[in-house]
Length: 218
Image (tube, rainbow, N blue to C red; front, side):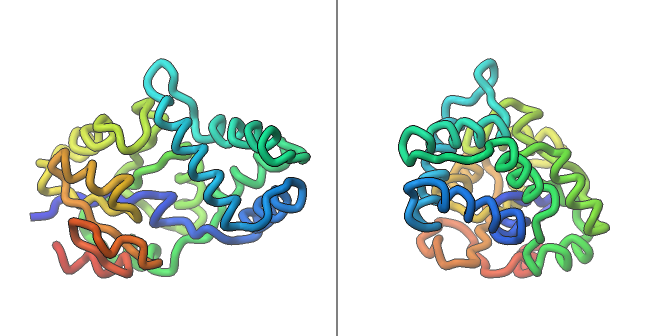
């Protein structure tokens, strides 16, 4: 029986588009040797992942600091020349004001079970965006609060502690199986992949194409 739901903010809730996101992407590509969005997204993903692997407890870095470190690396590799304070503001604005996916608002309004947001970025960003959309969740599990990023086991263990449920009573909703879902499964949680873009056909767990579809599992 499902008693709590954890939904990832960056993967599931906020769309990778919008005025701030578009301006951020445009300015980095226009002022560096990066040729297109695909190359930029791959570069940022790889560098963020590498830094997050070493960001833990005493060496923990916030997502904001990691973003700035990625920009520093982009200077060396791609010759980026930009105003970093302005890029940082665009990045923050995206996470505070970025548009939610179309099904997120309906889900949060209709779901009667406790819903928690899992976030790599500051919980303050999440709270701002929830408030401006007149939405409420039961709690926010931020990486800042535990000084660790997915897929470290502490993240999943903290989720169990936070909602006071058994692992098998928790749905862990994410956009990636190999990077997140399978580790949640190892800790006993029930992963569900919201695969809006056809990336997880081989996932060894439940896969849906819309967030609303997870309601069939509780």
